[in-house]
Amino acid sequence: MTKRLSSNELRAEVQKFPFWYHKIDLGERVITPGYNFDPIWDMIRRTRKHIDYRDKKVLDLASFDGMWAFEAEKLAARLVVATDCYYETFKKFLFCKEVLGSDVIPYYNISPYDM
Image (cartoon, rainbow, N blue to C red; front, side, top):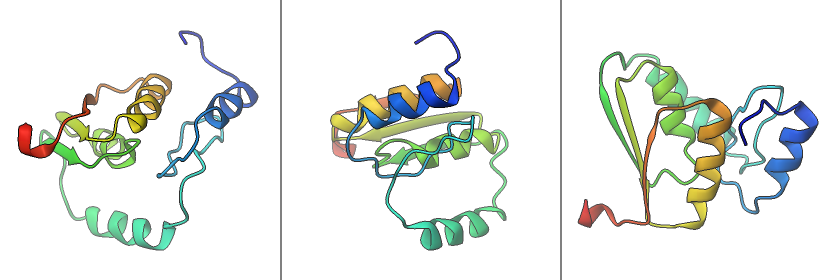
């Protein structure tokens, strides 16, 4: 996927993936259909407002499809690495990474004990 997708094309691509964990804003008014943990995630976001991510290195363990990694990047983290041991989530992560034009480094299919 190298061209910018329309909203309808982007929605169709998102629907090709089963089991989204996170709700990731991909732009074009398209959000992945993750679990409805919004109250918890909003609380975390409110807390994170007090953390300065600029020039920090972030390791997102158990990243799943990458919501927190992409958000850390948007908050100006200098380096973000996302990891998970479940390979199926890697495909969704790569899709989001490409759509978002992200520089987050994926390190999937590995246990944190082996990093």
